[in-house]
Image (cartoon, rainbow, N blue to C red; front, side, top):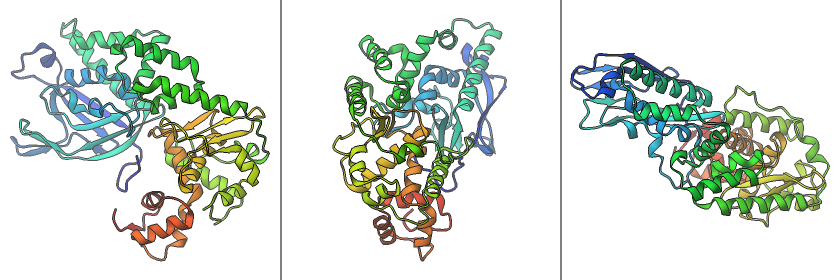
Length: 441
């Protein structure tokens, strides 16, 4: 997922609830939790609606809290752990609030979790059977703990309200109690299922055993990235692929000098910054440390030279003949001599170099072994931003432009100059050069 101009880069989710008279609503759970609900992301009001009956615009909706809380509890681990990924087979429907509306007016809002950062998006929406039209649209990154707290507070509030009203034995209360009473092993299993997009309470026994086995076969440093990228239909195949790669790196006797010396010696972006900003800062710091100035790294030879790798060193540390599985785009581990071993796709050079730089970021700043995956987890956003900025610095792109409008031909020329894909050039311009207009964006 890329940042977009005009999109809030980071914000906090805030859900407010004020209990209201349910009027003619008779269903106990609905009447007890009838409320005025407001949802904001930063200073933007997600629940801004046009009420066609009253012919007015307001910032809250009048709905029972029970269906919304039930949706959050039923999808708890998926909402908090699953990262959006294009190759994942299961549909994202359950990440959308509207999937739990039970006939009531809820915003067309998706929530996706992660270990450190979460993401949300909301769209204008209208349904003929509803008297309101949601007017707002946008997207934002959220702190993962903010999403967890808001959803937990929402569910707790609804459960406590039901108890106060003397309504016991509801599905919501039972589901929430089950989630609160998990032991450590059960919690770990549920988290793994959440990463995979599964409901931990309805996983077939055979699949459950596969999930349990994964945690014993893979090191912690790649486990959660593996789950983010894996599909529950190919867990066994994915684990075998990962084990083959891990064993291969440990068998190598590769030993190089300079790259290990770079590990941890450059400045990482501030922890409070967004993932992509951390990646940009890390790339700028490394380029400065290597005295690259405006140097272009458009070939493998240039990239190896920048890292003081001879041709033979590069061939020993970069394994291009070992095609990564669909689970990861690149990977890095340590040889017997504790030198890095990078596994990158044997595709065209620009894709290989970009994948290598993603793995290079992981080598320089992460616990090893590590992997770059297709997921949109915060870690993967960091290594993608690092690779883009290391290979095609925004300042160098700006210096190469002689106009503030970049058309298709200009983008193509810049991609060839920097040895990256046109997508990388467009991404850099769109996200770091606000004064340059992309002709078709």
